[in-house]
Picture 1 (cartoon, helix red, strand yellow):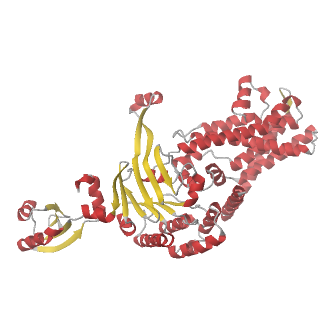
Picture 2 (cartoon, each protein chain N blue to C red):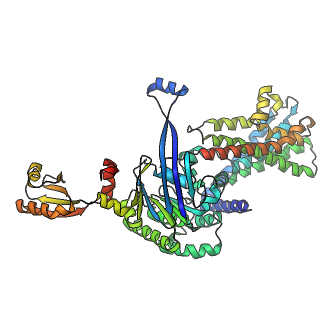
Picture 3 (cartoon, rainbow over the protein chains, first blue to last red):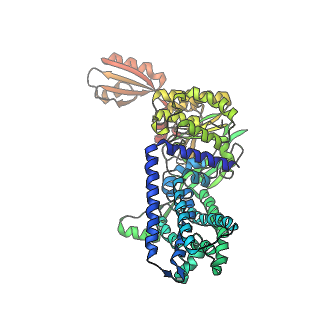
Length: 261
Length: 331
């Protein structure tokens, strides 16, 4: 309860900060909107050239892409802590965080949230809607619940991986250049994994489980029964990934050395 | 009951020294020269509730590291820390509810939002009730004179204004123990006075324990009965400021401004004291014991024509400097 109320406190503070710079807000909103528009066109143009990919039709691939955008938007809004090392470790902001009676990771998530990223989720829904109508997909009432579960699962998979990477900063002083590479690898989850070689497929499923953010959960809505096991594993993978990353984080905080004064 | 109990507390950092040159950099890739640095070396002390303690030492003596262990930010390598009856890093979230922290060089407030919004957020974070908040903070805001600043964003405040707000922010939950790490760094005299006045007041009113690190000895003189002095991670003095001054600061300095150029040899022949050149060749400073003062002045005045003369006590600042230069056992 306490954490939920704190969450809304920070959120209202975030909105207030944004509202302080009115012109900035307007420009940002328009540019975000434009970015999403370009993104949408880009997707349709690029996929316009592929008709069939290892048994997946063009519209199915577009659907997966659209689904992927939703958990990704949630991740980007709340767990995008790629600059954790620089902001909190090198500059010593972690000291301040650790003197407050709220879990350190939760505080950082709240401080770093970027709600405008949620717009990407709307783009995702539009893309999915477009693909679904062309595929004549039909949905049950409980699909909505599953959709929410899968999206949350995917978000937590993403969050877990990036929190783990951020935790590495507690052990090593070196600024890692792993983050941009991870964003690239993350993109592989948007495509049907069976187009990749077996090793890559294994990595994307069990080691860096990005496949659970895009292709596996979408397979359920596309009624690809051969992938159902993986689809239903999505929320489980989300919980496992996220739990492991929080444990790693907690261990890291114990090792925190602080920045010199 | 003790507010702080520390026993054989130690913190070691592992750091590696890089070899020189390109070849060295390649060797570093494979094997690194690790060196264990002991930032805090088996220190023990206790602080009673309501005490104001000055924690002093040169840069790198281990002050900040100790404070960070006492506040639960860092995990000690070994030793025992009990603060407010708790183990700081083990029960961090419950523990920090009972302390207030101000780092002079780092802001606790949110940069972009108005000061009162920061306060409101912290009030929620520390779960302070409206009643407690109003009762306590009205007084704090009034004493620190920050009422007019409350609706301004932090980034628009001057350093002195910001520092007063930081202090107020650290007291929102009215903690029984306050850690201040260089709270007056870079502030002008008036703000310093106001902050000292305020700290004294809350100490009297709420019996708040205060542990303070500073490079400004006048802070310590104004606030602390007791000082703990740290050098290379070890405590070299723990006791009253008064005693430190008695042991070390007995001497006086007499500044003579002569009308003519005088050489050191002449002065040495005249009186047996430690002579030191002043700003120019006309001025000399004699370091003497208090009891010899009249004798030295009498001799000099009767032998030379003087333009000016004044007598100074050795300041705490100088005492501390002397101790670091010569070691504690000298006195």
